[in-house]
Amino acid sequence: MAGIVVIFDFDKTIIDCDSDNFVVDELGATDLFNQLLPTMPWNSLMDRMMKELHSQGKTVEDIKEVLKRIPIHPRIIPAIKSAHALGCELRILSDANLFFIETILEHLDIKNYFSEINTNPGYVDEQEGRVRIFPYHDFTNCSHGCNLCPPNMCKGLIIERIQASLAKEGDKTIIYLGDGSGDYCPSLKLEEGDYVMPRKNFPLWDLISRNPMLIKAEIHEWCDGEELEKVLLHLINKISMEESHNNPSQLISADCKLQTISVAAHEALPQALSVPQ
Image 1: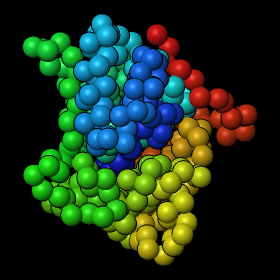
Image 2: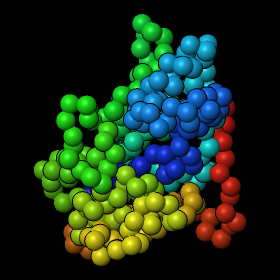
Image 3: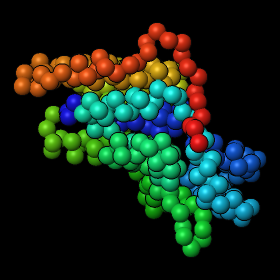
Image 4: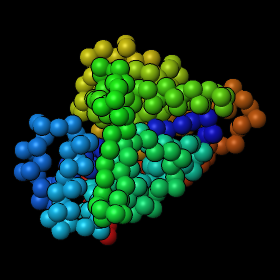
């Protein structure tokens, strides 16, 4: 419904791996990456890896072709399309980078389903002919001041900005989906009436499980793309029914819409698939 904003993490939430590691591994640069990892911040390291790959003759198109092969569970795209069809606003909040995310979303033909992407800058430097990657927050000049988050991005600060913007639009409910430790800070910022969907047995789930009472939002775990789809559509249905109850003029039926969306509840869980070429 119009009052629901769904915010997705990207790596290991929309896609089924870490996009940075996937590109480095697929292009044969893992050893150098591991050698340099202790010596510099992550974004600086990824920018350095893009430079190294360029010097080895790897092109921007080579990187794009790798990104098009990235593994994604077969129910993730239907879940995104269903949430959008039901009137939800969809956003991405990720510690990956814009070039990788946009390349993948464009290949999957789902970029236009998202109204906003918050992530580290990443783009093709036409003069150098290579991908450049930078931190979202320039921590070399000043700290964002959050001890829970990596120096380049505090997702909690971004969530607070989103909340302030949404407050001007009236009553909004946030559903936040994530997996990593960087998703814990924004989960703590969610309000009562919001929902957080941590991926089971991943760092966010572990952190929340230590003391769930710190989280004001309702907690609904998921383990794979099929369960993500079922839980997400259930929550959208639940929220929309509550909205309709509070405002009878909205009784168009999201429930009827949801009944037309096949979730395949009793089928065996499919394995993660690589995106078709």
